[in-house]
Image (tube, rainbow, N blue to C red; front, side, top):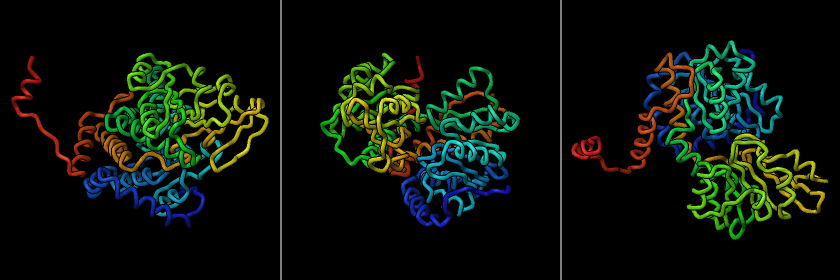
Length: 414
């Protein structure tokens, strides 16, 4: 390869190393899996391309995959979540990486293609951009891929659309749907990290204010739960009647966004859909309302509408844009409407990502060990979920009960 990496500054590597060393101390499951497979080198002779949020925890996953014998090439799944010091540490440690914090859209996709120029055999994707490029611009290369893993709800929506149209060229494992992923990462990880990002960006109190959570999937459940814990009144907006009932029974007010718009101090979108908060909502909001997005792409808060309603836009604090509206009010948009937990914070806690990335690593090995899987979106095998859950308990020194033979017989008998 003529270009091994493209990063901001290799001299930032020492600080990136410190960040990676910290998360390593708090990812016992991944540590154990690293030790288990690094002598065997099951991925030797294979290239793994990773399109992820490039911060310390994903950097450690990249190193674990490398320790299993793979050549690893990494690029960013979001320019604002890229941490240049961590990227530098990866490059200094022999991993090819293409990412610079704050890259524009043109560079973002150029880096994706530069990673794919390494002709990977296996993919770890976050949001589906890498898979989309392979199916739209590099279809010949797509037919050479063994398979991949997808980290997010948004990415799986795109993959299932490909599968439904009969266009998916290689098997993909739905890591996002694993029990040890969505029950912990989507709920507890998103809940904590979103409010961490909001609090870091704003340095304002949450207690006593009203938080409007738009979307009540697993991520929305976590955001609402932590908002409640911080003392906020919580309103949930949903399009799904079952989830709306669930939010009510969890103790939250439920109403259309058109009504909630006038009541909220914080608005957090967690839907995976576009144009969720639009012009008609902005016009009803309080002066000083804060807008944040926790969905994968920056399409949930309609920035074009917000711009058209404004007479002036200025950055009033790092990561906060103030939109001075023509009607005299002000609205504050965090992190340009991108993932607030990663653009304004460090993302999910290390212990949470330990579970998700253990699932990623073992699912990658599963793809390699099961050639000829159909070109479909496959669930994570239950035995992988159970192994990760049991390993974490064992690492923490926590024991659980086991069924007696008589109990097992009773449960399996009609």
